[in-house]
Length: 129
Image 1: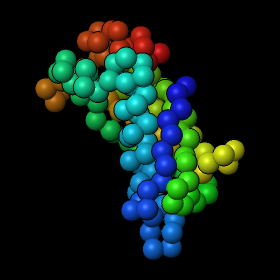
Image 2 (image 1 turned 60 degrees about the vertical axis):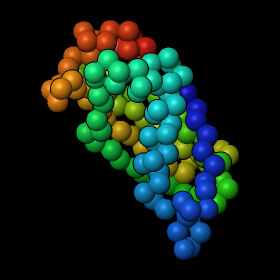
Image 3 (image 1 turned 180 degrees about the horizontal axis):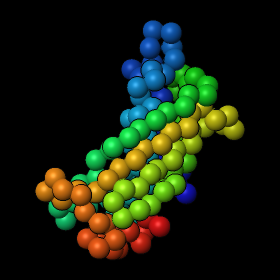
């Protein structure tokens, strides 16, 4: 598991002063990119090798609102790992209060076709496990 921190910006809030729901998907992406960088196999490296990882499903379960200047700690982990797809789980907290739980499922492609990541990028597959 890896923790990423995001401080809510003013422009990320709606007229009621609450973080707009659409931003949580962006926070998940920020945390996912940071996670891959931290394990030493970032998206820049993956894509330089000709492999892409599109999102094929995403969900957010909102628990409590956040507001401007809140620091959201996002725990990122791999909850499922298969040859053709994998799933990240994101638990977002402000202090000890869970504010959102999300999941994103991704596949691996090369030239628009699915690839078996354990064979195509075995080092990445090992690091994700």
